[in-house]
Amino acid sequence: MTDHADAATLLTAPRVRALAEQLQLRPTKQWGQNFVIDPNTVRKIVRLAGIGPDESVVEIGPGLGSLTLPLLEAAAHVTAVEIDPRLATQLPLTVADLALQLTDRLAVVQQDAMTLMTLPDPQPVALVANLPYNVAVPVVLSFLERFPTLRRVLVMVQLEVAERLAAAPGNKVYGVPSVKAGWYADVRLADRVGRNVFWPAPNVDSGLVSMTFREPPSTTASRKDVFACVDAAFAARRKTLRAALAGWAGSPVEAERMLRAAGVDPSLRGERLTIGQFAAIAEQRIG
Image 1 (cartoon, rainbow, N blue to C red):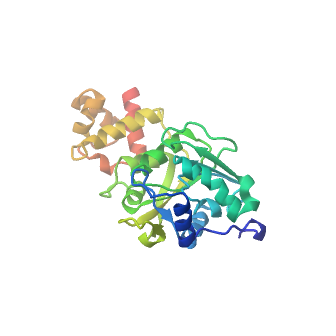
Image 2 (cartoon, rainbow, N blue to C red):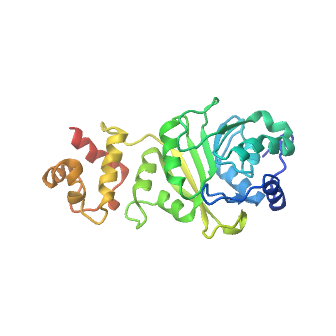
Image 3 (spheres, helix red, strand yellow):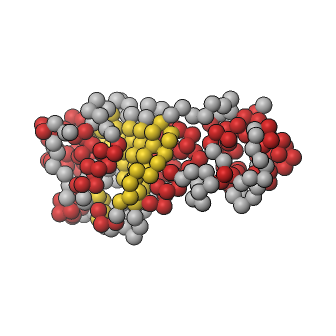
């Protein structure tokens, strides 16, 4: 429960439109801007993210602040990473207007999340965001790689992307994002979100992806080596692993040797394998 003193006034559809008008903001496709206009949805996101009162959170693409406000209620600190200079400048003003008592919990970093290498302290334990579908996977994977303090992720993305991230081996949408996310965390589809909670309404449904961190597979291979093996396996996803990994391994014969040594049937395709099995194969290349 939010302490009453920490309660913020949340953004509703009229407030979002008024803010956009004030900023002369036309939501752009380039930055995938669809603003959340439903307070119940952002409260649900914060609840599913399990943010504790002593935790620091990073939010990517806060936009007008729909999700930032309930995050500030729940967390000790929120670092908001925003690429759009108008939105980055406006966000602290909106927070001061609607939740003055929470302004000291907010830090805004005006930068492209794709190229961001460092964050101001306190370092985040959770990443919570509403992400544009065109950058969702690379942004999440790059943050997992760069910010080792992260223990949980809850992101709202296009449903198709959510299903891909959360897919298990053998599922037809299981692919590179599913395997790589699985290196860091247990990933699941936490909920589905309709189109009417956004302005402008997108022409696709959205999904909430939850990631809970655990140790990566036990292996002597580096993450980089394992990911190179994954990329090779899926670059020709219709081919058997013996054929798909031939270039990566040096030859089809060498690929077969590595696969058998790792206990993997060379006639399988990459979509059948867990991240642990990819790690076992990558280990053979080094050994």
